[in-house]
Image 1: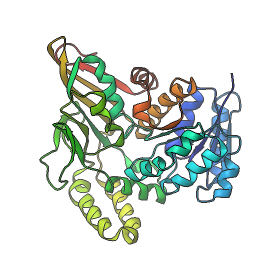
Image 2: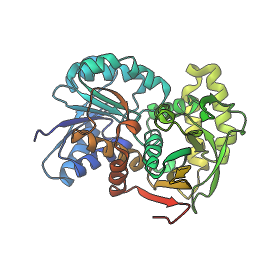
Image 3: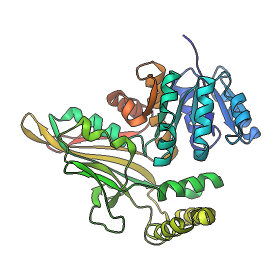
Image 4: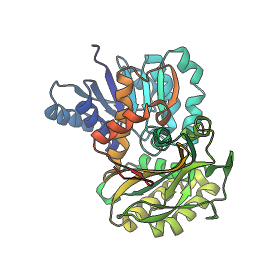
Length: 381
């Protein structure tokens, strides 16, 4: 069996290290950890080689802003995993991957990323390459959860997914580029929901279209605001009986939600290029200062429909204490399906829509995500 070589851009970062660990644990691939700090890349590689047999990991220098360096770095690579804060270099990374004959997955989020990759879709198909975007849990899970829930119904009328994220930001070190990308992603979100047969944009200054979701004993009932992910667009086509679907996100903390976020949103809409750096620092400060326990992340689906002529009400809740494991585990669950060839096909795909959802759920549970399925008309399991 041919052993593939995966390169992880940002391989010694917060998400990259967890991705590396899980790939070494779950697969036989060789890994190249790449980033702008060669010493950190080599140190991380050494640590993994001491933990796992086979001396399968190397560390190299890579700079996404340098095309010549990228071309050299991608030589001999089968698959590129983008876990770095390099969203603004998406086109350069993707084009270089195509030139080098690499397949690709990223953990980026946002309409700009998808538009950039979609502009390359014909080139991706013509090169017989498999590109996957929207990896992780947010996006990456909502549409997969809805597809998984479909098996419980003859017809599904409502399927909404909510998320709550409360991370102890003091525990992590973030690069300046990571802070900036985080703020850009939060500010650029699209407030769309699907209701009564159409996608419609809601007024973000109004709470009329917010929903209340109960995230269990630790987080309780929270008001959640709509946030559109591209992966959800095709859900009403897959389940034409749906009257309502969408993703909804709970806030961070009272100070960030009611003071910092509105201030940043207005400031960046007016002066985005000038203020992006100080606004990212303000966001980081507010999250580190005002986020309090309990810490953890939850994604929950609530679905209603009919089965055998009777009302059916299903809830599925996924959770993890660590945000980087909650990001990495779905990506690796997707890559397990890629590696056995079951989802490897030419084109540009979204993680949540390309995976086989039942196996996806099983593999995530096995790797450490807590999965609870409750039939509200019967028993939980």
